[in-house]
Length: 105
Image (cartoon, rainbow, N blue to C red; front, side):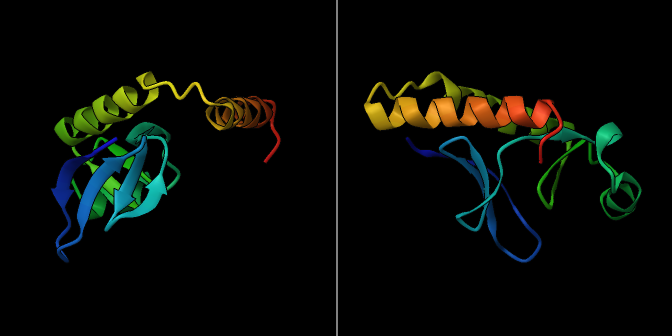
């Protein structure tokens, strides 16, 4: 699966979605977008990046960038690895999602 380029940071690092992860300079940063209304540091982020509508890890995104990120992440989820390790990974993610929703950190 390829990378979907999103933007370049002010310090020259590429932000891309790779295998369903938001990556900064090729390193995984986050696997989900958080709307600015729900982000615990929204005031500081909006002060630094006034047009931010979402954040993924340490990265703020405008609405257009967030749409591109979400589209690339959705595309990665549609690719299904039917191998035993792929199925195991999907089950592990589902169990962690349920545990997190139930309040386990």
